[in-house]
View 1 (cartoon, one colour):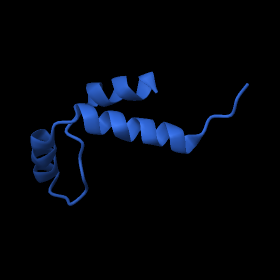
View 2 (cartoon, one colour):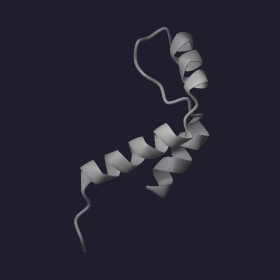
View 3 (cartoon, rainbow, N blue to C red):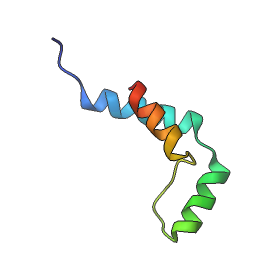
Length: 54
């Protein structure tokens, strides 16, 4: 069995999050949470779906 490259998995997830995220929604999420932490603009269901596929 081949070893899983964690960096490759992370890169794939970030690419999908960027592609499917909504920047306008991300700003709203960030404002709601009152933080400087960046958001992708995805719902929990969308994020889970992407993570499962990875």
